[in-house]
Image 1: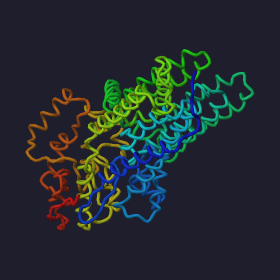
Image 2 (image 1 turned 180 degrees about the vertical axis):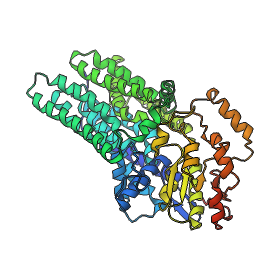
Image 3 (image 1 turned 180 degrees about the horizontal axis):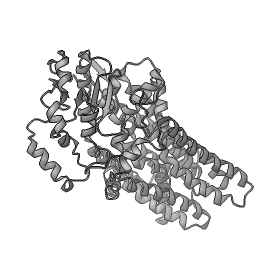
Image 4 (image 1 turned 90 degrees about the horizontal axis):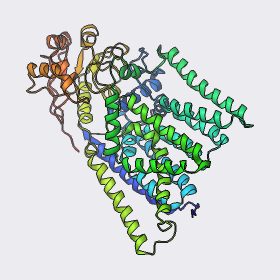
Length: 555
């Protein structure tokens, strides 16, 4: 017999909220820094690309990276529009990440609340507390929100949908009611179309002989119309059916399914997902054992399996820390609750929703506390990038501050490998995306070996045809002879799949050597990265390109 206290206890939930908020604020503080007398709270460079699109939308009415160039270099249109709302606030560019990070915290707390509320009603307060606590200290949830990604927002709507179709609750009406939440998730990031397709099929099957059949057809048609409508809008505005990132990462040999499998396995192990994943598989087995829950178990299993296959098909993420896992975290947590209850019932453990009195219960509670503490420490150990500001972010800002002081003419062409921070901070210039996220030509070229999303470039085109005035490289080339660069490129296939080779390719490219390499700008960044170069004629034309005092990082 399952005994559950379905009344939500606010004290444990409040405790989780306080813990998560404390971790979150600490993470934001860790990523902030003062340089040149200014405090900077920015986002990860990819998120800054979305913020650049939002900036141009608010100030110029164009959802683009470069004004007048319609290339869809974002995969999160809904989130970018939300970011655009933050651009209406009277906040200087150096603090532009603050409102986005604050919104991320609110979204995270809403997600935890949905998980806690759903689990309390189905499994009682104790199981709800344990799994919500895990989510509250789950570092990827903090990481991606602090850095400004759409991940938690998309997951929030998927969680709201998944909560309606738990095997205990699943019905034709619930399947229909869940679809609008997935529409919102799709607008945030279009790969939620996989969830829409799966749930639409489930709704049709569940309501095939139901009075809700006509409503089902209506909602399924609305789902198709929303997806088709966004595709048509993208084609009309940008000239392509799909985002430019699709062509960048999924064509021309850019992706590797083997790399996707490795990413999947590493995420399970390094990011603290494995225990929840194992409990979820046990929970799905428990649901399958009961005939009345079998349809819901099959739907949950299909949701997890299809999304897992999608992660591997895409070749995984170019970033660590399980970003692509987040959309199925709600399903895994709900199934894990069933797995925990299955263990408790099978082994006749004490009912968790009674007061802790016995030594056995006390030991169980201590073991759980120790487990979650160790799990959190394990995650933190795998997140060295949480401690102190991101070095590349700091040096990008130093380069931006230097270029801003040069009083360069508007329209100066600046080539970048990292297409977010510098273009956002210096909006009066034009930019060339050397890795192709915002360049239609490069995105459709044949991929080189290396990390997905960073393995396409065409310097004959970018440097020889587009002729940028300034190139902001990402690396420090001190003691890096041409012979080493050539050797690295010649043996690229022997390096790990997540290696990057564009720095070496740039350093010895004939166009770079001929027109840029001898014209390094005298920028001394705090971490001595992001060497920056000017083209010959531009360097001769602008006598302002002189040495500046070294940038000092105040924090």
